Image 1 (cartoon, one colour):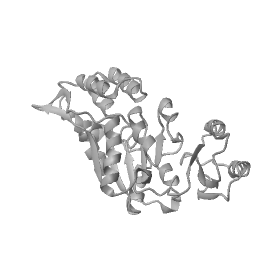
Image 2 (tube, one colour):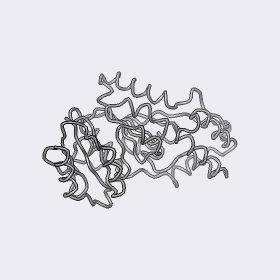
Image 3 (tube, rainbow, N blue to C red):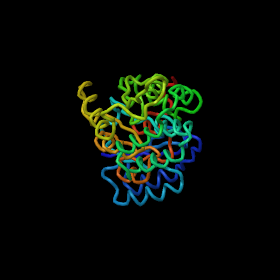
Image 4 (cartoon, helix red, strand yellow):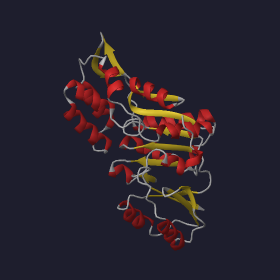
Length: 292
């Protein structure tokens, strides 16, 4: 059996019961369960509907996400999350670059790298190189004034952890930021790249080896082995090309508000919901959410 989940933005909550019933009847689904009134509903189907992609495309115009996954084993034991533009609303290196006066140039490289147009490691070295000489104290300024947690992230981490899951933040960004975000959102651990600093200034270099796509996949494998669970018991979320490897390996790999080229290759796509969509995908009702 497969589970179909329909959800909208928590701010809009415009999911029409008639739409849910129409799809359920057309696809031979079971009874619909509403996980949040007017926001999220789910039902099981015996097989993948032949017109699933066409319907998915149509619903995008209505602000509705349509997701399909195996019904068995939906509650996951590991959350592995990207940071930039996933658990937070910004790209940290872009914010540092803006403070250094090279924001537009770095943001363009970031966008191309996240879309898979550039090699991630090379693009990171180039961008960090443009930060050479920046006062390291700017990191604290950016953290205090520019970094915001993405909607639903705190509830996602708290709810999964209360249910016994492990939460890991794995970023191609920097440890100075993941440490702050992991502590603020309640992650059990974090991994990222290290900006090299000398005499209170950024050197324009990052510690090697760089944590990129392959390292994120390795993190999934290593953490699952340490926890004694399979990769099928992991939920992974990200938005960039360097997240695709771990997204495609996990039991539930979610492209959240991702670049189009990334979303096209992801098993589960969420374009309208926030991070609480990952709880709905596991069958949690909004009344089950933990408020941190």
